[in-house]
Image 1 (spheres, rainbow, N blue to C red):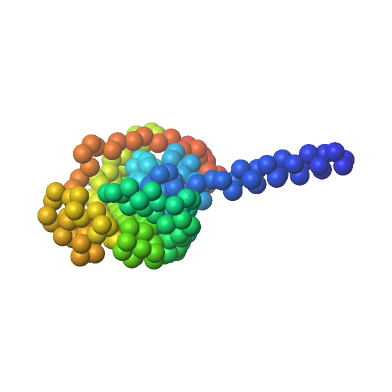
Image 2: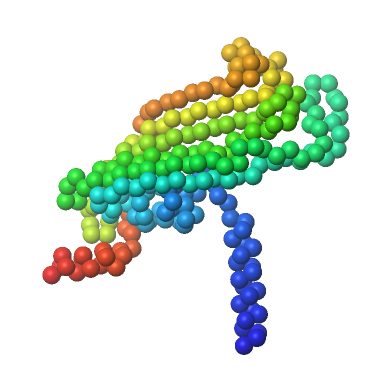
Length: 244
């Protein structure tokens, strides 16, 4: 019995250490959108967990019926950099002072919402809103000679979605993606002389965002997907009643 308990504790410790290394993002993109999908670390592609489904699988919306969702995520990335050794002092270079500098702005609210309506016997129409952000840097130190320094990229997506059930457990869906994007860079005045674009160089010298751009356009390719989710107990009961 003691050996079994010791083995169980060892396995639990290994799993705990491995879980602690899990990432909250996949590069800049989140590994899940909406609280339900975020809780599964983005593993719910084939499941109909909520109206954030079009972020990965538009077809899942047809299994939801009429539904409304509102969620809020608090993202807490810890960003810092460390420098060892003294700058070389070579002309034309930007030497960083030795030490560790941490980024501010540690907490980012990430809202999401969506709605879905049944428009026919086998079809639904819904709309989902989700975003990317919170991975910006905000260094109070004069990293390149001017403080503060950092970059910020924020993205917002709006996805109108139509899904159609072609079989009891199979559906297809399509989403049009409308997107808004904003980018800001600050504390980079030292690089102004290296820019050939007068507008960008002027923006950097003034310390205002280097470039802010937005676009609203449909997706370049039609996002068609199919879904065959595993039915829940409620779904099985409904299917049995339909057969009777």
